Each structure stands twice: as C-alpha cells, then as structure tokens.
Image (cartoon, rainbow, N blue to C red; front, side):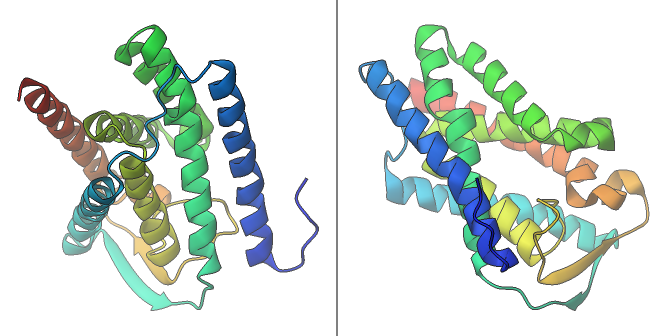
Length: 236
C-alpha cells in the first residue's frame, strides 16, 4: 500500500519505490533458492557500462528528437516548473522494470534454455507491461517490442544490467520529464511543452515520439548494430 501523501511528487516516489523494493526482495529470494546458480549480471564493469549506456541513450533519443524537430514534425512551445524528484521517481521505475524483465528471470531462462527463449519471454513481458500501446496501434506496439529487443541486445553485449537501465532511464527522464515527448504515468509532468503535427507516421501524432516510424527504424538499426558488435566481440 502507498502512504496517503498530499504531495503528488513524494507520492510518486513511494509509488515507484514500493514495487522496486518488491522486485529486489523477490530477486534475492529466488537467487538464494536457486543456490546462486544464475548469474545476475547486475553491476559488471560499472564505469564502462555507464558510459556506454549514457552515450547510446543520448544518441538514440537525440537522433529521434532531432529528426522530428528538423522536419517540423515536433515543436517546443513554452516551459513549466517541475521538481527534480520526478527524475528520481523515473530512475527507480526504470531500475524496477529492467530488473523485472532482464534481471533474474531473463538470466534463469537463458541458463536453463537459451538466449532466444529468454529474449522471447522478456520481450513479451515488457510489451504486455506497456499494454497502453495496444490501444494506440501497430506502430507504437512495434516500437515497444523493438525497444525491448534493443535493451536486450545492449544487455547481451555488455553483460551488465547497468547499460540498459541507463539507456531506458534517459529515454524516460529526458524524453518524458524534460521534453514531454514520451508517455509515462499520467501524473508525470514535463519541463518543455512539445507538440507534434504533420504526417502522423513521422510525428507519432497524439502518441508522440513513441508512435513515430523514426523510433522504429532507429530501434532496428540499434538492434542490428549491437548483435553484430556482439558477434565480433565473441570472435575476437
């Protein structure tokens, strides 16, 4: 249960913190029940994974937004005042999601079966966890699905959950809370007012960046890039 708090910002922190702690506790329990046979790959090479995640995340979002702004499909009109606690809430939420989807469950399935099985299950879980995309249409669903595959490719390349957490966090925090171009829970505010217009296939329309074909194309490019990099890394 979430404490009855009048401050919406603090309430959101608790709303994200409680499921995060539940995921952490369940991960620890299952890991010990499994006698630590499953490697969690949570914090390997933290500096390298953080730098890679930050570079990839900013590039991914920057190219997407840059194309939309350059083509006139998106515009920034005005700003709002927000508390930085919303960024903390988004960070906690991102860690929770990645631990749930690509943490113990992913590694356990991969160890007992193979990476394909782990990828299929984690992608299905991530996609259905973002069920609102199904009401938006095929392109938003494809963007959620390919985003999950992209995060998994980053995980497989780095063998660390840090990198996909940072990539995912930058998408949510900068894309949603700063730019207002990505959809989070309805109570999340945004610093800038970003509006979308013109060709809906390009702009995403009411579904914003996540409904744009630009994101789908970039996701596919990123997936292919990391798969090729992983194969090259294995050969070396």
